[in-house]
Image 1: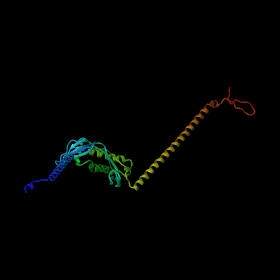
Image 2 (image 1 turned 30 degrees about the vertical axis):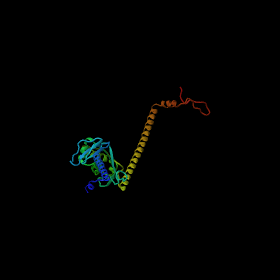
Image 3 (image 1 turned 45 degrees about the vertical axis):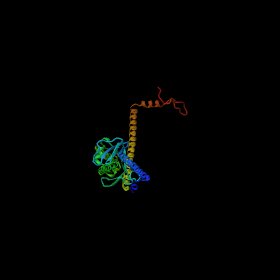
Image 4 (image 1 turned 90 degrees about the horizontal axis):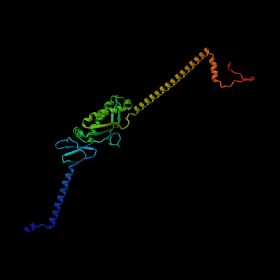
Length: 291
């Protein structure tokens, strides 16, 4: 009885040994997997910010490109230090399937829309400040705080302008004013807004656009008419001045002839080709007194 209980068949021992070996191998891979998952890489063109999600600490120094130990409870956020561009557009085939274009109003409450683009990068020295301000990754900052700041800047300036100004001579000034305000807002926290620009035409209601185009056409026609009048006036004045000058010249010459008859003979000599005039029935007669 005891011999039977203490007996272990070779196959049973072998199976148990294999099972222990498999468990050991799986345990080793698990340990390796946990160890490898405790590392994170900062990609080229970015800086990293190490955040302790348990203690809530943020590393004050940015991490350069490379691999870093990131055990459970920590996370490394990446921010771009090279120029990136994002476009908020109505097109469903670009960066978002939804309409992300900006809506705003002119000073009369007319609704307008436009696609807007921004180019930006993060100051590596201030990257930790940027994270501490918004506590999120770059995509969320672009979709939230940056978009809101640009939209508000455009709305505030557009509300001071009429639609003809926004669509015409103040179009560039509007977007440049928005850029300056946004740059001043984000520069202290390390987000460098390089440029903000219209990514297409400003969408104006068709009826209003037709009115603007008609007004522009009328203004161009008026300018052309003014130019024609100015040209005609200039030509007429030129002819008057020429006629006046010719008349004064004739008057001066007539007065000279009246006071000095010899001028007539002088003019004749100046025009003489050296041939004496001939008359029918007689020989050549001189037309100048040669005494």
